[in-house]
Image 1 (cartoon, rainbow, N blue to C red):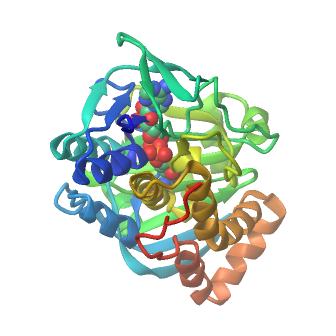
Image 2: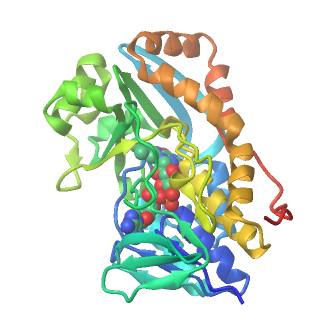
Length: 374
Ligand SMILES: Cc1cc2nc3c(=O)[nH]c(=O)nc-3n(C[C@H](O)[C@H](O)[C@H](O)COP(=O)(O)OP(=O)(O)OC[C@H]3O[C@@H](n4cnc5c(N)ncnc54)[C@H](O)[C@@H]3O)c2cc1C
């Protein structure tokens, strides 16, 4: 008899796996280091696809207060390109969303161990051994690794010189800036990065920045230095933040984001989910769709008796088209020389923005198909 799988990390990927397994009659253990709802570095953009997948897991982001996002705006210096999104979207904080998903996982039958950080994940005698804080050691045949942006020391993702830094802050914007922002997700390009601003629930706005590590270090001064650097590039940016009230005591930050990474192989019984399997550039706002899909796909693979390698191969095939386009767009949007050309092209042909938004979505795949046994 197979032992129940262990899931490490209760973001969208881990929760999707837990709900799928629990709905199939399993009792997976879901280990999460946060002891309660927490904010995360993320632009909080939910595409129509993400919204549909969340509803399938019993979470309705509109009912949770998600703010309607209907337009995309691209800004470089004094140039602005704008288009309607080709699909309806929402802005909802991860604190609210992830908490709702975790509750669904628990109600479905997953055993949730919150407030426990996993320290070690090692393979011994054909099984996985997991060591977490305040918990006796656990052993499993299969582990679903869903720790997102955070690597476990024993099974790290590769590092590169192109790794990026992500930072985030919530604000109450001035009434004039909130009107100006409207229902758009607004992307301001600056040398080495881009900053996304959009509405979230309860009248808040979320500002989330992705910037190459070298550029971030070059700007100096941490968050303040970064905002000042963006403001030197775009006059609109400081106008949008004038009089804004920050809502967190300090910005959230994450370093070493390996944009474009896709896992090529993993040891037996280790299913990498979400950001542990693939890191799509943030400008697509599709990371959560991938996380939800990968969690569900890995759980289905395990239920059907397929191995981790089969699951990873299928995931990579599904992600290939959107990843290719997203990597290209990401490089152009981070590169100071190409940024102006991108925005100018989008101004002349607004249909390009809609096409880019459409084609950086996760491909629809048939829900089953892991018949190949290893
Ligand atoms: C700057 C930026 C902006 C983004 N904007 C968007 C966006 O607007 N829309 C979108 O769809 N995607 C966006 N993304 C991507 C999205 O945030 C991720 O793809 C998504 O969160 C991945 O989900 P996940 O479940 O894999 O990981 P996460 O959401 O990161 O969840 C991982 C979980 O694991 C837990 N954990 C970590 N380590 C341990 C441990 N050792 N033990 C136990 N638990 C642990 C964490 O506490 C966390 O709850 C953005 C990413 C970045 C960097």
